[in-house]
Image (cartoon, rainbow, N blue to C red):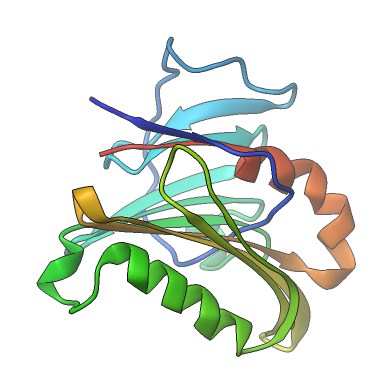
Length: 190
């Protein structure tokens, strides 16, 4: 399976929606994971990500969207999570949208910027598709929360990736020990 490698150094954080448990395999071609983390590779083609030891993993598919969740809380037993990363891979993007994935990714970031208090806003460029970065402070179910969004449009593959890490504002600084590696090293797949 051909993978697009996207490594970036940028402190960040992510989350999206809920799903089913799956088994993961260590891929021999992946770089060493930082201490306290393991690489996981999704079974639905989203890619490979760094998961903190003791955290939970879920995966689901709905139509053309594949989702992956790496969470501090167990979604299977609690039905939700407060702290964690979610990744949505939207395939065959042009089937339902009139704009390219890269245009949508940029518009998505602008929409997020208009919704709450913006803490970070920018674009990471390189030899990979642009990564639109947005960190906001808002309220989630009555709890002050910080949410870090990354949107990536891959026009050649007709895919959109939405990565989101969130944590309560009171735990944000403590959780950067988890979020930074999770958002700094990931490999998006086909």
